[in-house]
Length: 184
Image (cartoon, rainbow, N blue to C red):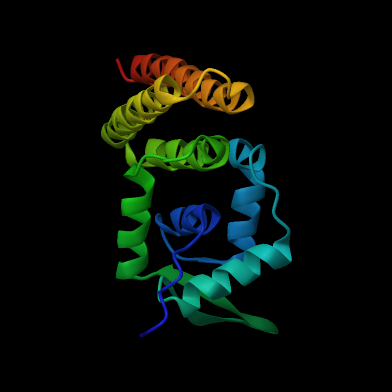
């Protein structure tokens, strides 16, 4: 049996998003990341960690690099998104987040990058995410209805998940309205 290919982390997909407009060197990606407030508010990353993630993406075939001479300075590696990297990024950016715990980081990154792709992608992402949240909430509600009433702590956890999905759905509606108004 061959080992399963390890899928990139949400943060790695976000790094691919920085290369979608065109090639860049690792430090330039780090600067873009740290200067993008919406991402900086949800992820903290050290420069060495970012470089390690970029190496992992290169090894996985999502990035390739070329060497650029810089006169008297050492040459630098310019990273390019491969076709498989671009394909993986485009699939990721429109997929809804499946777990409430991942929403704060992953969905915010997806929304940021979807906006760079255009209003159609933003609207599609929000619609998909709403459908997923409705589905998750319905599953939690069904689970809660089937639980014994004396399982107080377990019921509270499931009730929390229901309320979390309800809150996310309300916020997604605000997102939809706010972002749509920017394009009317």
